[in-house]
Image (cartoon, rainbow, N blue to C red; front, side, top):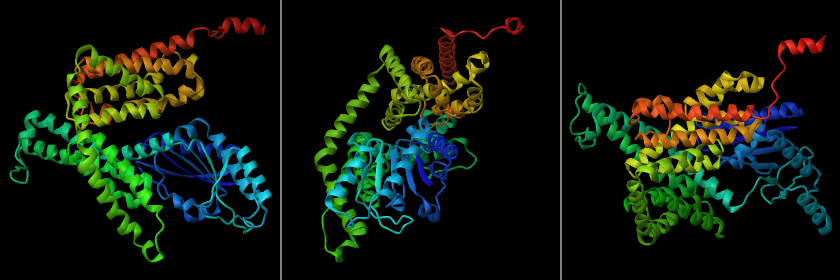
Length: 514
């Protein structure tokens, strides 16, 4: 069969491409042609219209909203998380094949009686599928049939996570650019650079201070977009393009009333819900054409703006201030404990939902300007870098404890870990989760706790060792990472050694052979 797929994770870096590779390989192994569109940070490798038209089934492996999903209307499809595609690509390919076969076997609508339709629905339910009622497709026999959809969840909770992760995925470039520029400005001009006059009034191309001020002011502007972009793309994930304007405006109101990151989350959800509800209202055909470009954005902006300004903005601002005060009040053992918890969460599912919760908490804290928030960001990055490097190091220390495939995975793991891509440890955890996962959690928790204990701070949300010069207290920060790596490496080697038979020596082998 011909299968097309779309993969997309919140950061669009590792899981997106690992899932694509896994699906393509699983397709080859099963004798099917699988073509994947990766909607990642490096750009989208779009599927051609001809490929989609010829496809028997579609796989959506995404933790964020799939862009252009209407292109696949009418095709039987499987929807799941990107992590599931990495873990069990072969199973997803089988589900896609079964969905395609089921759709082919179903009679065309209107040509069967009620009892036959009921039987078809019962069979579909037994197979775990949920025949939809969306746009019809035209299989090879030319008979239109309804779309068949097999999901890996579909609950409100899973949808909510996908909406939020869509918003987070779009703010990462803004936070990365803004955070790096501001960190660079502090490195060049000191923390007093925030008091420099606007560069539009005074800029000396030969002055390092002027360049530091330029970096700081450009970075601050980038960070100002964070909350509106978050809200806008949460709304977009819920209700498509018409929800962008209400989402962005709601996010801007959240900034205006100082409701911050939490206000942006709520504004995005409100905008998406309002526009989605308005789209269900039946309207005359003459009005339908202007609904997406005029009516929905206009009414959405009015409703969301009113709610944010008058009803929910102030309470959220109070809550946000309480969170900021709590972060600023953390010190000593409490701050170190928080660093350990964040560190453990970064490692426990290696780029999955728990990891993203910890990462989003750290990134959201950057908007408060709190020193403790900058320390939490440092802890999160240190903890996320530790697991892949630790496992790569372990393969060098005890080669006999790892398979050839794991040795191959170790080569890219060095760079992935150094680049703050925790997913580099997945190949090791997939083979031996009971030994690997507790070991990396222990090391990452250690790295996170030590990073805060050493007083390290970081304003950049990504970059790994490449932003080390911009870390507050870089030498001790590096020490925290190295200690975390040592803890994880020692733990995984110990765990793999206990209860495992050692290979026979060369002499014993020769004697046995004789």
